[in-house]
Image (cartoon, rainbow, N blue to C red; front, top):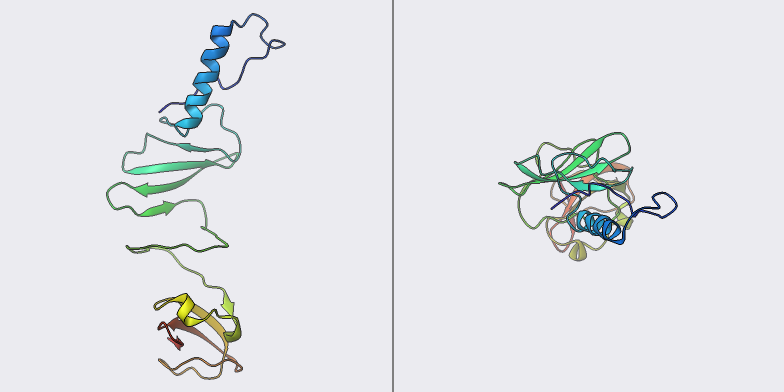
Length: 165
């Protein structure tokens, strides 16, 4: 794992005396850096906005760093627990975030509120899936949700129906 010492491919116009050997060494050095995730203790000197690199200085985690042009944002998996952590804001997705085991700790999970008719089928979502609806007809805990009302309630799929709760 490495970071390139000189991040570029020398051009003859910039460095007319670069030998083929030096050219090859710089190319190999840069290629090794890419293959290793730019791994080292500390941000690469050649980091640019949007770059992701691996910080070997943080021993308790396996961190991937995202350089936003000013700061490094940490996305890490703790080695001992396998817990994913992120700093500097929210984790947002337009797709699914799926965990096969474990817990989410110390965070707020915000579910987009939808009309009952917009829910996918409870069987498709699977037992344990959660959502939040804005038009339930009642607020009775553990009852099957029906749309068309004015009540905002959390719902959970039992694998067959969406249940208030």
